[in-house]
Length: 400
Image 1 (cartoon, rainbow, N blue to C red):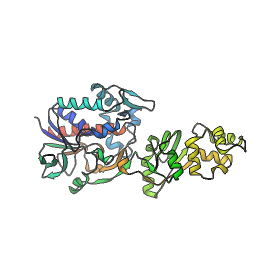
Image 2: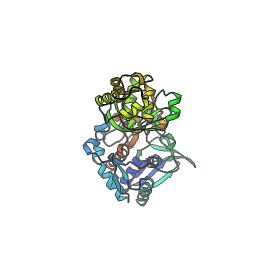
Image 3: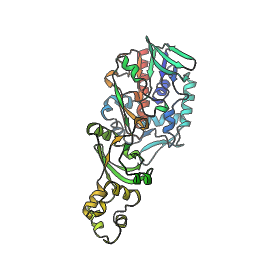
Image 4: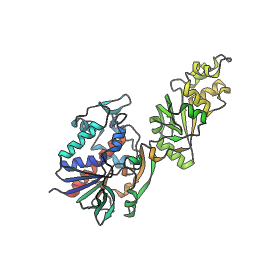
């Protein structure tokens, strides 16, 4: 028999659950505080929506750190290949980029979201926008609406309210107090996939803010990765930095600072650099010697001078070492409001295998509300959708 289901949050997790539940014949209503659905999803797609990753699946499912095992069943049931087939079913073909990331061929999120919402509407899903969840009265939901307070009773509830990054798009973490007041443990939110502050000089900051450093390698406790990052007015940011952000954030929390080691010439060995530098004309300028021997100029040469003010006086051997292992001192992560995603959320011990909350029978949770994090590269979106679908399957079992 058809049951009444309330989904709070119109992002990928909530919409994924709505898709399965409505297809099973249940009456599904999605409530969202914002004027439109999927606002963070749309922002992510402005520069090309990265929906998943094409690396081998055994590698893919290892990208979620301490939450690998808790997410495994959900990901096994909705793999990267499944998400590509799902997108194709909505008329959006995808391709694999040179980095292994998967994008829609149209490189936009809006056509996919429109087709998704149209399918959900055809399946009977009802959307109620500008409906902000404020808590419970008994087992019923209480929502603020343009027409005043609203109480909603449902046979089952799914919470898909997101984490705490980009709060202007709707994920403001306002639900944390509600669940904590009900006895549910929630880990504090922390920035993930974020930039970091450095103590740049005014001259370096004003000249190079917004400039990318290409073909570099960065090393931290997370490992060594090659790519590019960007000098910002506050410090550093970009995809290569985000790959290290969890390790760097944790180091700062433990020690008050973190060191990120930069290889400015990953295609050349330290021995070759030392040899080529020693062969330069001693009367030539330092900039000329760097350019001819190491291929460094512009922002790379400036960063070397910024971090090591006396670098021009180093011997060829020590200069080669500096180029291959330039230590960048990081002071703090950028605020969580600027982060691509967040770490923290509902503790896993509060969630059963069906993604239901132990302390709130009939209430389920999915997406970034849960205590997991992942790097950029399609992992975040895939896991949000996978947990939404896993919670929907749990609800279906409960409603049988």
